[in-house]
Each structure stands twice: as C-alpha cells, then as structure tokens.
Image (cartoon, rainbow, N blue to C red; front, side, top):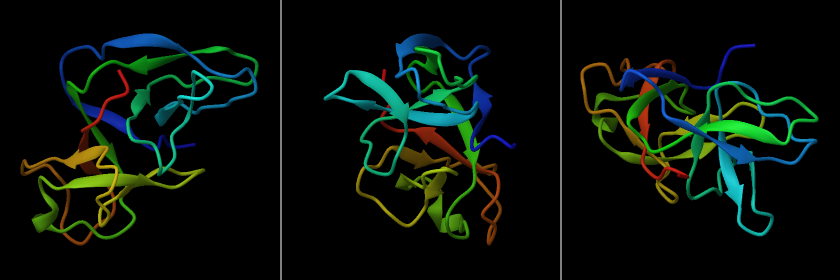
Length: 139
C-alpha cells in the first residue's frame, strides 16, 4: 500500500522520538499521528487534530510505541482532496480523511499544514504530489 505522505526535503535525517500508542492501534508507515490529551497516547491523525507528527515506520497491532517526527524541519508530499492551484502556494490548510489521509487544500480551521511556496509545491490542476510542511508539530 502506498504511503499517505512521504518526506521529500529538509534536513539530512528526520529527527524522531518514541511516543506511546494503544496496543490495538495500527498506524501505517507514512501516516500522521495526533495526540489524545484525555488519554495521553498517540492515535492516527484525524481532521480535528490541532497538531500532528509524521510516522515514518508505523506500528502494528500489539505494539505500544511508535517513532514520530520531532519539529517540522522537513517537507512532506501527499495528495489533496481538491485540485492544487498555483494560488494555493503558501496557504495554511487542514488534514482530512480517516483511512486515507489527505491535504484539505480548501479548509483553514486547524491549519496543521502550510503549502510549500516553491516551484515544487505541486502541479496546477492535479491532486497528486503536493508539498506541505507541518505547521503545527506535535513535538
């Protein structure tokens, strides 16, 4: 299965840390995670999350720890829910989805992402390979 997100730029190594997850939680490599403040554990990210982290390796059922990104010194590439436009460069936007996580290019409420402003940000009229930076990192 293809990753929802992949790292495409930034520093030479992705700085990570271990976080706690519930043993029944399955997070695929390339997913984003959020934090349940009531439970104190990480979960697969959802649209309501106000901060996110990237999970480069994921976790299988039965595991209680997951490696997640620290900070936002890297660029992610993912798919948007609507066609990318050149005028979307630099905007703040959200996350959408449950099974497949997408960049919610037309919504600005949690603002967990900022769209890349470079010439590599995305292809006009395409949903694929749009670059974003985590605007509100979990750690």
